[in-house]
Amino acid sequence: MGRRRAKGRNISGVLLLDKPLGLTSNAALQEVKRLFGAAKAGHTGSLDPLADGLLPLCFGEATKMSAFLLDADKRYHVRVQLGVRTTTGDAEGEVLERREVGALAIEQLETVLDEFRGEIQQLPPMYSAVKHQGRRLYELAREGVEVERKPRTIQIYALELGEVSGDTFELDIHCSKGTYVRTLAEDIGERLGCGAHVAALRRTRVGPYGEEAMVTLERLKEVAESSREKLDEFLLPIETMLGHWPEIRLSADTEHYLRQGQPVMVPKAPPHGWVRLYGADGGFLGAGEIDDGGLVAPRRLVRT
Image (tube, rainbow, N blue to C red; front, side, top):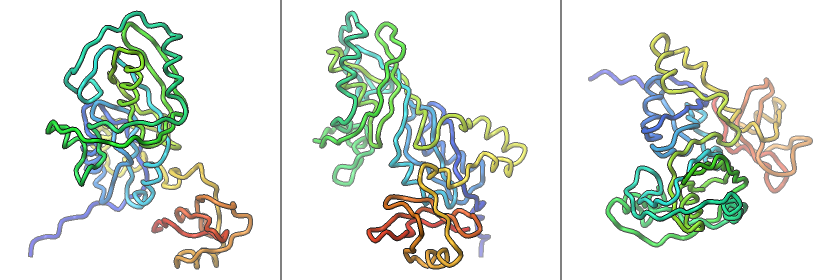
């Protein structure tokens, strides 16, 4: 019999990667997983190769909570190029059309931007991971096929105009999950009558995480050369993914029953919603939810 391959290190936590330009999110994940020698890892929502910035990576037990970051609000800084439409809605695509931009007044731009604040309908682009009859839209787009898509409701919580220079302008965007910044830029360009595409895009926030604790791939490689174990110092605790939720601490008895999958009564628990669960010893247990009967129900527990 051949030797059994090592499965990797059983580490758990969250790494806030500053994804570089040119890498797919999966390629970045696999490189970081290799550096850590991790047994299990996953990312929490992809960034296009053209985009850089915050890409939270989950290791080990943290992968159980990754869906909560997928559903979280996001923030982006984007530079929009007016007068040029591309196949992909960004600088990587082939040019479809060039139009005259004309004089761009700040007041005119702000008036148009106001139409895209709040709850809006957005049509997913063909170059996206949305599925149609079992296939990703971007696969069909690469074959020259365009299919009908249904608009989706999204929220633009903030849309702040930054520097305006010639035919370009910058935006800071705070949006809900499922928002396509490329489509937002294209739609704004259409309302201005000249078309547009994303020239540069950086993600600056995902849920509770901002840029402050990000680490670059280059820095990880430097540390890995001296000590793989030192990389673990960059990992954030799993519970930081849920830091904005109410905290519930259980007694030894209620912890026992909750670990068996049973909802438990906790005095002064919130009336509804998601909660962070901690055991009698103060250790993080996972995510719970207040059920219809007001009990704390276990939803996603981590191994300790």
